[in-house]
Length: 301
Image (cartoon, rainbow, N blue to C red):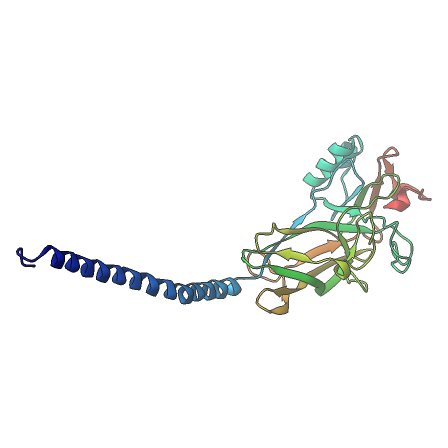
């Protein structure tokens, strides 16, 4: 501008320049504002697509470690030697438990006594014998940001054969008990898995009134599972679960192990005719295989 221009012209020029600058800034801001929504929408769609592409959940199985102070049974695939027998029968419950583990013993637990289960749900075996379970904790974990709901399961690929166990050591306690979790026979009975909780709903189908929700920041779903094989049998089986996710997908899914193979669970019961059977706990060590007439505690193993 000409330095000789009037004061009025100078003021007018400055006003025009400021207005143009302001309109430019506002225009850019408005353009950015109107571009935010499409950008956010694209980002959300991208995140949802990535989330939906992830595995709905992963599974892990941990066999229950047991408590030597509770009731338990240990089975071995061979007979005990004289020296092993002397060491075992001179031990208390904790020492015997640890010793049998060191010899390769496999732990079985007494199945929960479902005192409040409906009469339609049978207790014990068809012959009235005590049932034993191979108990494990099933954990389901999802990394998805949206919820995944599991509302059913079924046992798959069940194969059974006679138990290879030859020695049984039992530590029965007086009276039955129930533990929080679920129970399933292998092969399963109708309506299983059922609740074992010692409260309302005991013995009822679990998924009639419960679901398992993972993802969406939920902690892992974990259940104590009592798996019961037929007497004298050892079985292997897998699990399929039915799930529904936030993306309108519903299907059955075979659970897999950490290597990506179909999960296989081993479940066994006590052998039908063991060569050695020991009972102790509320009574002194008793060699049931040497008795002509077995007592009531021997019948509990």
